[in-house]
Image (cartoon, rainbow, N blue to C red; front, top):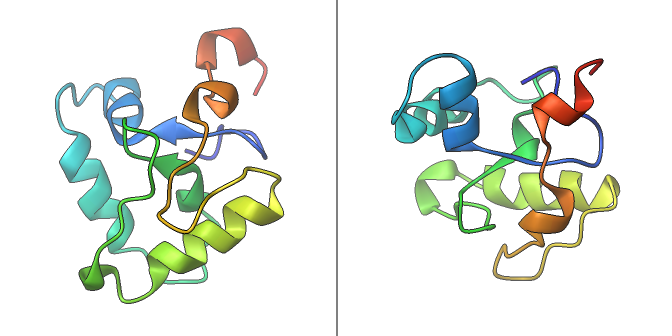
Amino acid sequence: MARIPHGRLATYGQIADLIGAFGCARQVGWALRRLKLPSSVPWHRVVNAQGRISMSLSREGSDWIQRDLLLVEGIPVDEEGCLPLRQFLWHPDAHAGD
């Protein structure tokens, strides 16, 4: 995840595939949810495949922190957590030097 550039997004499934855990998007989400905040891991750049922040009461407010961090990076996010995934999606092969 450290390779995801500032101002870019990845999906949980994309991260799962990159680490060889094909089909384990939920497990990636669970692992990110366990991070202590603040974190040096750019967890806020990972969203669901529908182009949304996965909002949940179980996140204890980290979904709103994620929204704020993405806004600071110039990624527009509406009040419901929707964002333009296609426009900001990170393509690792296109950014081999990242």
